[in-house]
Length: 92
Image 1 (cartoon, one colour):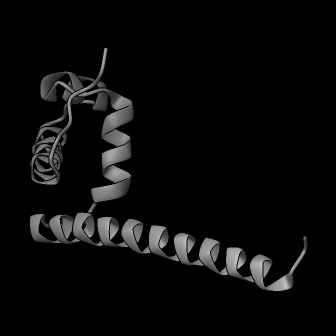
Image 2: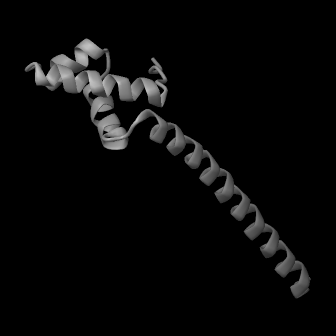
Image 3: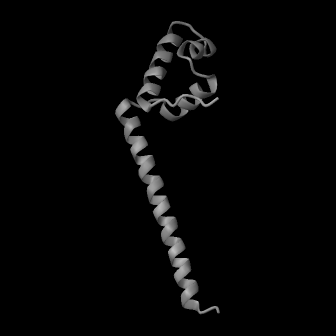
């Protein structure tokens, strides 16, 4: 069963709610049940979005997409260079 896809804004809101609940004395397990997320997701979110604001999280996602695009571009260029080197070498 595929999990839900939460947007960064939703994740940060849930993490803030979790901080409030934990201040009231709830355990992580109870808090996760209340927020309807797994403990694994909670700790992963805490690691990735720990002290971020909503705008920072949006910017992070934009930068990650741009980074993936640039990596793909570099890989394609490296492949083109290899093909040209092979063609210029004359290995027939």
